[in-house]
Image 1 (cartoon, helix red, strand yellow):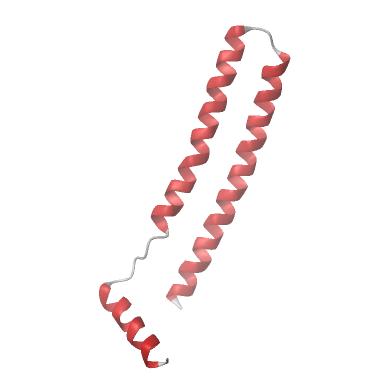
Image 2 (spheres, one colour; image 1 turned 60 degrees about the vertical axis):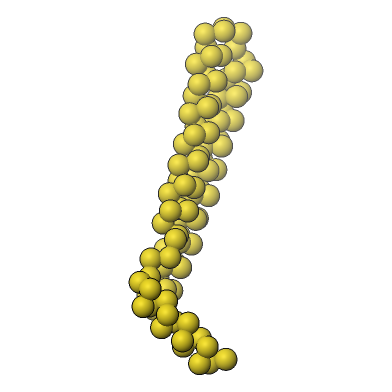
Length: 89
């Protein structure tokens, strides 16, 4: 049961990250549109910096997810699961 809950939590985390990525992509698209519309070099540089920051922001949740989905079971639990699996096959 605990493994199923962890699986559900991982799936929810993945869905949340996908949602966050879509939102960040929308924000980036809006900034790119603003860049296209401006001719002021200072504004363009500021928009480029914001776009780069949004790109970094997209990487953080993905890194957190990869850290949180690593197995957390104790060695004894893993061995017991393997024994059960081998006994059933």
